[in-house]
Image 1 (cartoon, rainbow, N blue to C red):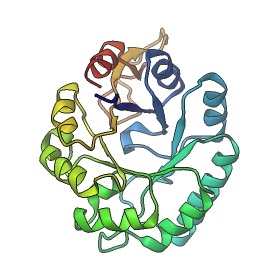
Image 2 (image 1 turned 180 degrees about the vertical axis):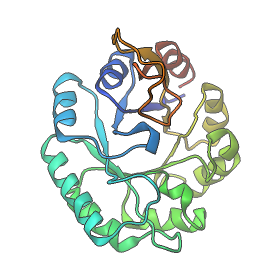
Image 3 (image 1 turned 180 degrees about the horizontal axis):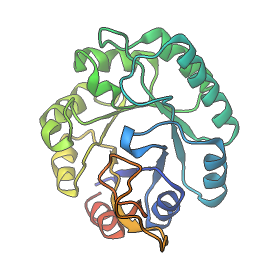
Length: 245
C-alpha cells in the first residue's frame, strides 16, 4: 500500500518545530487557534522556513467568522499571498464564498493568480458551502490542488460518510484532504475508498510554556486552554497516525 501524507495545522512556533521533528510531512501554518486559523505573520513564516525542511503551506484568512469577504479584505488576502510567497511559502490555504454560500469563483481566481503557480488548498469554507457536490466541481475547475473537508460537519467523525462520497466523486481529479477532529481509526475506512492520498490532523497536545507566574482568575482566550499553556504536538498521536498511514 502507498503511504499517506500527514499534514498538521500548527498555530505557534513550538508546534511547528515539534511537528517537523516528530515526522509530520507538511505544515499548515496558521495563527489564532480559537478562530480556526488566520494568516500568520511574515516573520513567523520566514523563521519556520529557516528551521524546517518540510513543505509549509500558509493559511490566508484575514479574520474569523465566515468566508464572505469585502473587496478590501480580498486585496489584503492577495497581498498576503504575494508577500508570504516571497518569504518562502510552499503553498497556500484559503477559500472564499459568496453571500448565498456558493464558491466565489472570481475571488478565488484572483487569489490563485496571486499564488503564481504554487499549490493551493481550498479549506473548510468548503464545508460551509451550499451544496458540497457542486462546490467540489467548481473548485476542481478553478485549479485548486486539494480540498480540506470534514464532510460539511463539525468533525470528521460526523461527516465521514460524506467524505467517503466526496473521495469517490473527486477520483484522481483533486486531492480530498480529510480533516477536522481526525483520528487514526478513520484512516482504514478512508483508505478503502482507493483515493485517499493525504490526511490533515493537528495531533495537538496541551503543554506548559515555562511561565512560572500564573494568574488563576485571568484568561485571554475563550478557547479551552489554560493561561500559561500553549498547543504543541503529541508525539504519541503522531506515531499512531504514522502506523496507520
